Length: 134
Image (cartoon, rainbow, N blue to C red; front, side):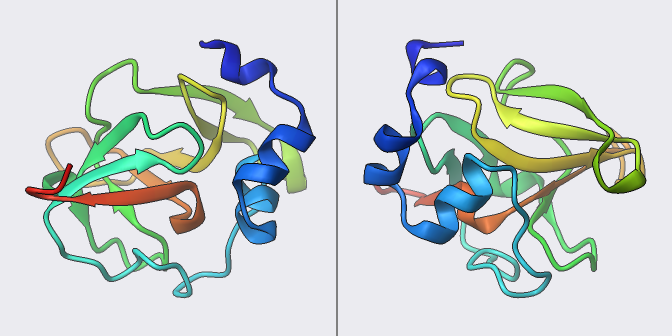
């Protein structure tokens, strides 16, 4: 992980709006079917909202019916980190940006082939770099 993981709340509050801060830095969750990228089918690369690290390709995005953008694999194996999450009386696997520690969402073992995984990601944690845009 980079030095970005050591930045304090003041640094992140200056870079993110209130909802993005709640989700990205305080491990919040947006309401289902409300996120900017829930229904997006535009080609491109999804970047971390906090540090712009490439995380997911639109080619791996699919409609899981969950209400959140879902992907069956990250752009590369070390793009995201996984942390055991026992909050809310459940055992889940939290997904964070490997570069800055931004909370992205969770990963579940109920996705499509070829991985069988569903990376369930908050729209507030990512930003789409449209294909052909720099």
